[in-house]
Length: 184
Image (cartoon, rainbow, N blue to C red; front, side, top):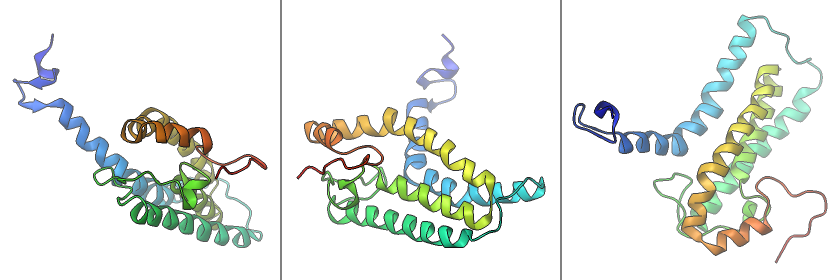
């Protein structure tokens, strides 16, 4: 076995397990939303303009885009406020909610903050007339779906146990379909 890359590497003096844990916490807590909402969109728009790629038509896009931006921001804020006031914690994994939140936007979706981010990005894409930004949303959605199923949901099951399993059965990960009844 190569000792340079074992979990406790005496050659390098690095605890690889904690080395990978810190970036993961940073990614989940701060980096993912910052990169997703602040860094990537302008880079995509600038790249699109530099490469002279086709852009979305001008049309009345603002009539749709501005309400999407407002709705996305409102949903993100409502989700964060619910986690802070009802869950007595934050979206940051270093200070997670101590109480499971099932009210507010969490009554309709297990991930309303993420939905808000997607809605905001769609609005930003329309405002910028950016086809690349509009295509970025479903790609980000796929990555987010894989992350939630593999990483976040097992942690929530471990933290809240049967209560979270019951919540999973009642509330969809993303959105309700059609006229599904609300429990409670």
